[in-house]
Image (cartoon, rainbow, N blue to C red; front, top):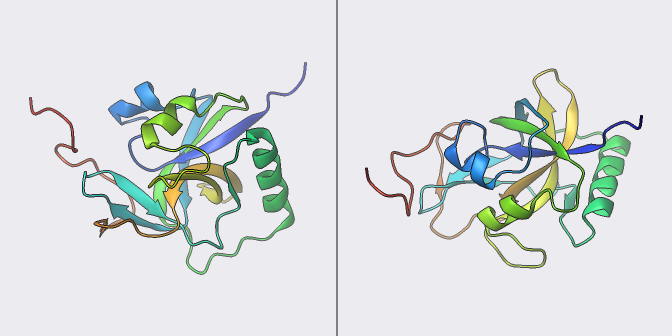
Length: 170
């Protein structure tokens, strides 16, 4: 039997298992474990989080060749030593997902991402550190420049506001 091939997504906001959007908009989960990523958290005016990643941390940006992107990211991460200026500190989940062409269809739509677009969230691969110290490549929805009207988030783990933009009051 061939080994199951998979890829990873670092979720730091609404795609974490504890969030209601995860089951509706997230990819199929094979497993999940706590992890940390390099970057800084900001809050968009709607209340959603966004991770700012330094350009030199980004390993690969998503293209139409998803499988080649993932292979390149794995190869680059394997051949390079990623030393962070500051240790990874943004808390989230490292989600293992199937290595399939449609794995990100729902989450790309949810995050407003499409290849080649100038969307707020971009899907890219960054190095992520699991709690056991192992560094793995992981897709993340993040940005390389702070969006207009975004405010710095105080802390390293996003917590849902009482209500986010567009949610109904109960």
